[in-house]
Each structure stands twice: as structure tokens, then as C-alpha cells.
Amino acid sequence: MQLYTIEAGNFKLDGGAMFGVVPKAIWNRTNPADANNMIDIATRCLLIEDGNKLILIDNGAGEKQSDKFFSYYFQWGGHSLDASLKKHGFHRDDITDVFMTHLHFDHCGGSIQWNKDRTGYEPAFKNATFWTDTNHWQWAIHPNPREKASFLKENLLPMEESEQLKFIDRGETMFLKNSELGFDILFADGHTEKQMLPHINYKGKTLVFAADLVPTVGHIPVPYLTGYDTRPLLTMVEKERFLNNAIENNFYLFFEHDAHNEICTLQATEKGPRLDKIFTFDELFN
Image (cartoon, rainbow, N blue to C red; front, side, top):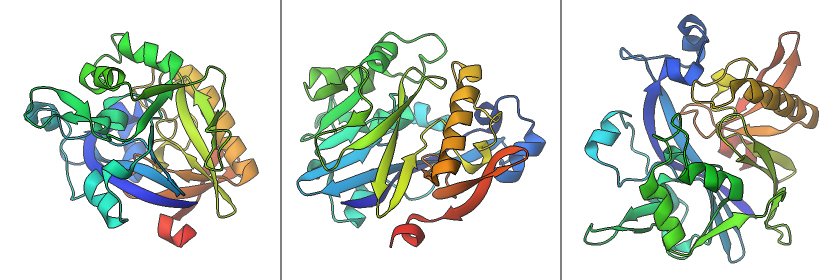
């Protein structure tokens, strides 16, 4: 098995929205804001290669949305999904499986693209199976008012229409359980219904794809939650359990949204779980 970091692009989000009730004087230390109160956000994905399988975990926001849409998110930097795949010798047509932690646009928007004449949409990974959770799919296609702006029908319905969409079995806690590429899944419901967090054993370490349960290093303290969480009190319970388990088992947290920190370990303190060490992917595994 070989893992690769895939940088699908950077954008900016309002710092207050990303930290909810946490005062700016606190979160600005770890996630400094610009003059518009916006902080740096990544869409860092993970690629798993083994034999004939090439599994991509999440895929960023994609490129099909309008200029007006992207004007709200202030894209920056030179990263792109295609360029990052090419850097490691791959093309999107090589992808066999796309595992989506959840279906907010910044995690699954890259699944779908315009067709050639821009009259409709088509899968951006023509040879891949798209994987999501059954309950989460229903949550996404019948969105609540709070999440409606994050669940975009142009990202979702073309996946279903393509017949490339499959669902994780209800109650299943492992992806591809009969394969050497299989990995454990932790379900979390505070941010959105049935978010899935992969736990991957790699080179003697457990790498945990933290997704939106712990978006950045600045979100490590248990009460530091995003304003996007649909059930914030549940997020705190899930997050505390998750972080303590990571400390106990020496897990390595892989950050999807931290534009400046890729991976970290945690330590227990009198104030609760806190940052221990920060690593780049290459430092840790190459």
C-alpha cells in the first residue's frame, strides 16, 4: 500500500463561522485572519494505492461552480486536484473508488464536472465507484435549511444518475472489509448526519482522516467548534471521545482543512487534549 497527499485547492472562510462562539482573540493565534476576517482553508485529500485499486478520500469543491459562487470563498494558491494527481503519476481516470466523508460541497464537489459542451453534468472520475453512507445520502438530498447551501444538487444527483453511486451498508464500520485496502470508519453525527472518518493503518502508524470533526490545529480544544455544526453539543461529546482515543492509541491526525499543517499528534494536559507535534506527510512517511 502507498498513500499520497492530494491538494485539491485552497480557499478562505470567515474565521468567526469556523470557530463559532470562540473569541477571535483566541482563534486568531492559530488561524490568523486577513483584513476581511477570512482564514486560510485547504481541501487536502488522501489517495490510497494498492494493486489495481486507487481510492481517493474526498475531492474538494471542484471547478464547475460559477464565478459568483467562488467569489464568496476567495480561492488562493496554485493547488489543484489534477495537478496534484499528476505530481504522483496519476490521472483522474485511474481512480477506482471515491470515498466521501460527507457531501458538503467542499468535500465532494470535485466528483462531478461539466460535460464537454457544458449542457449538463457528468462524473469527473469516469471509472470510479462513488461511496457514501445511506443515512447521510438521504440527509443530503432532503436537506435541512441550515445545510441547504452546502448540499448542492448538481454535486449529488448526477452521481446517482450515473449509476456509479454505492452506499456503505447500514451499521458497517469498515470500508472494503474483505480487501487488504480496507480501513475502519468512525461515524460522527454532530457536524452532519453520519460523517465518516477513515482510520488507515500505514507503515506501522494509524492515520486518521479528521475531516470536519477537527478541521485545523486550532480546533483541537474540545469546545472549539465550527459554527457549521448542526448538533454542536453532540460534536463536543464525539470530539472528546475521539481525541482521547487518539491520545491513548497514538493516532496521527490528518488535517483536511488546515492549509499550513498536515498531520499532528496529541497530548493529554490538565486542560484536556492539546497539540503535541506537527509533521508533514513526507517527514512522517518518506
